Length: 66
Image 1 (tube, one colour):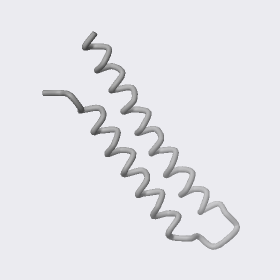
Image 2 (cartoon, helix red, strand yellow; image 1 turned 180 degrees about the vertical axis):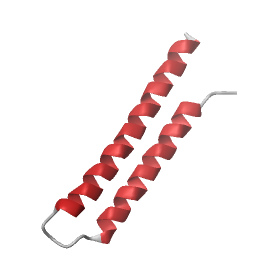
Image 3 (tube, rainbow, N blue to C red; image 1 turned 60 degrees about the vertical axis):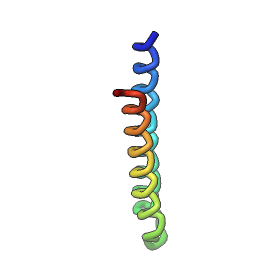
């Protein structure tokens, strides 16, 4: 059953990385495509969310390995 735990951890890790990609895409491209002037705090918050999701995904993916 150890392989199941590792496989589940890797899948969850990949999903967090996918969520990071969606966060940066939505916030970055959304602010670029809006008819209003680009707000830099939205762009920077997208990058921060992407980075946090990736770090969290890597931590989950490597968790429990010796």
